[in-house]
Length: 94
Image (cartoon, rainbow, N blue to C red; front, side, top):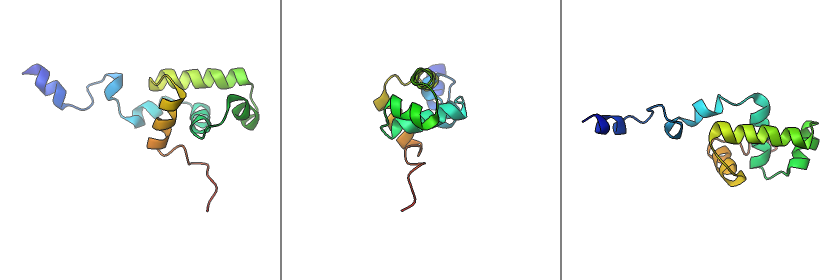
């Protein structure tokens, strides 16, 4: 009965079933930028240099992104970003 009907609803409110859009909307612009850089395989030092911020700040943004998206490693972040079309958002036009 009840359990089955909840199973049929894709968005029951738990974090695991939230759409990527709603998870992405929790991120600040800066966090999205850091996520894009991570997804492109950039090192924290390189991200810091490109964004003119400290490495500690990059780590803080990165930690916030992981917490908000409930993804706990760079590989997971990269997969998420690729799936959302963020990884190649900065690639130069061919």
